[in-house]
Image 1 (spheres, helix red, strand yellow):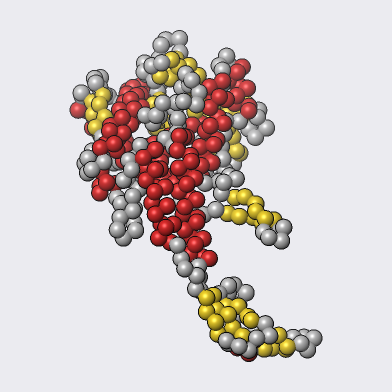
Image 2 (image 1 turned 90 degrees about the vertical axis):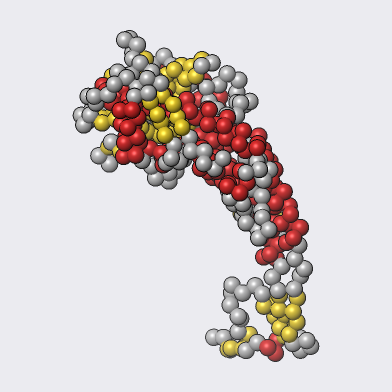
Length: 417
C-alpha cells in the first residue's frame, strides 16, 4: 500500500480508529486533551482562520470579505528550526564501524534526512512528531515512516518517555481510500511487535491483501522515536505530547502579519491618483444611441473622471506614504517573534538594505540562539538514536549480518556555530 502524501486536505485520527483503540483496552485521553491545541497550531502554520479571513462593513452598511496578507510567520519559524537542526551532514555513529556504514547507506538510500527535516518542521509547529519503523516482510525491507502530531497516539508512557505508540495515516489499496492504524507495542517475549488494522471510508475494519496484522520486529527497544521541541508543555500536565515552539508567541505571529498587511495596504492606498476632466475622454455610442465616455479599463483604479468639469483638465494627487514608520513596526514585530520562539532578537532582523539576515550572519553574535540549538539538539538526539537502534535491530531480524552496534551517538552539523 502507498501512503497519501499529497496533503490536499487535513487529516485527523478518525473516530473508527479511536473506537478500535478503546476496544483494544487503550485510552485516547492524551490525544483528546491535546487535539484542540494541535488544531489551533495547525491553523496558524497554514495561516487560515478568522484572523486571516473575516467580514467587514463599509460606510454604506455593505458587508464584504477581507483577506489579510501574510508571510506565514509561524511556518517560517518552524522551517528555520528544521534547517538549523538537521541536514544531510548529520551523522549517526555507532561503536561498530560496520553498523555506522550500514546506517549511513540506509539513510542515504531512503532519503531519510530530507524527510526527517520535514518531520522536525512539523513537530516544532504542532508540538510532536515521530519516526517509526515500517517492515515489508515479503521483500525483507525496513523503512522509516514519518508522522506529525495529528497522526501520533501514545498508548503507554511515563516520565522517561513513550513506551508504546500508535500511528494513524491514510493509504490507498487498489484505488480504495483507507485509514491505516499501526500499533508499536511490546509483545509477551519483551520485544516490539507492529500490529496493523485498516478501515474503509465507512469506518469498518477491512482485510487488505499483503498487509500482515501482526509482525515481529525482534527489537527489544522502541521501534519509533518521538520528536518534541525543548519547550515545556504548559497546556496539558503530564502529557506525552510536546508543545509548539510558537505556542506562547501567537500574539507575536499576529503582530507580524498585522504590520506586514498594514505596510502593503499603505503602499496600495498611496498610489498616485489622476483626475481627468470630461473633455479628456473619448466617447462612443451605445446600442441605444447614447454617448458614453470610453473607460481606460475596468481594472484601472488610478484614473478617475471629473464629471461636468472643464477646469484643471488634469489634476494629480499623490498621498504621503508612511512606509518608514510601518517598516519600523514590521521590524519590531519580527524581532519579538524571533525572541519568543527561541531564535533570538536578531534572527529575523532586517539589515540596511531591507532583507532578513541569514542564519550565518546572526549566529556569530547570538548566544541565545546557540543555547537553544544545543537544547533542541539534545532533545532530538534521543529520537534519532532510538529509531537508528530500531532500524539496526529490524535489519538483523530481516537477515542483515550486523554485529552489535554498541553505543549510538548523533553528531549534528554545527558548522554554522
